Image (cartoon, rainbow, N blue to C red; front, side, top):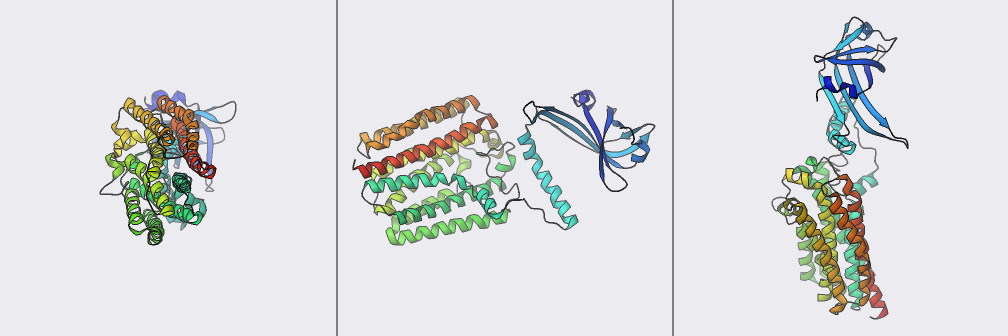
Length: 441
């Protein structure tokens, strides 16, 4: 639909210009669009000849206020150009036109696609004024956002499970457990920053117009919270610090096993998105995450405590590995459309809708089946069965994914519930081992 034919949809109209004193002025106006020209009659008291010759911005706007506060159904068209007087009106031949319709582009998406232009504007303005514009966020909260600190729950829970199995086997050292968590948390944060860096330079994050709090990356580089070079330096230092702790544990608790697990974990973390391997781009990201946050962390934590491997620890690692893999998997559902554009061929992009949902259902079923088998096979105490209490949450995750598949913003509650389900279920598994050990079960 052309501007000339749909202008009646914008009942609020105004013209903006800079007055003789250098101040911006916006006044209501009657506006019509005819034959590619914008004809403007400013409000009474603003004579067209006094405005003629200036660059102006003409806006046609509509906003529907909501009874409880806020707005909806927002849309506008803005024209920028030189104004010329023609009798009692102004004529503007548009040099640039901007428009937005909330029905076509939701507001969060509009903000997302406008961010690069806003950053370019601020950079140009800063150079002209000699000012370096930066996001108004402190160093701590910037770091918090860049490393995606809340997601460290995905490291804490499997570490707790590994520690719980070790206690169940009569070996437990709090200091070693905390040191293990610190080393793994550093590598996890390095993974998050490296993932954002490579998804940015490879085009996956810029292609995503509808990120959410759980999908689309942290956007830290795109939002100017950290530069690309800063991200490289940060993930390198985080990886290096984590490996240093791993080396210490290897030297004190078992050289080859811990070195091997550290090397495997670092490989999975770095090459999750880093070229040339790019596991996530080849449909192997889910396997990498499930392996890294399941067997690698649980078995590694268990070995640091006991200096041996155990089938019990391996089996205990499977449910949490699957659940954390499903955090990634469910978060990929809103990203699928944009990941395909960027060539990031994760599992969801390779599946049909029904196949994707079947994989989700099968993975959840496998998770709870393994939990149920642990005491049956005498690989752990019966108290781990308390983790089966989250099955209703898992059902809600599946139902939410089925109902909102392909709907980016509607998926947010489901993604949140899925993270909570993984954290709660994993915590209950860990608690089951700790309680079983304390009760001598």
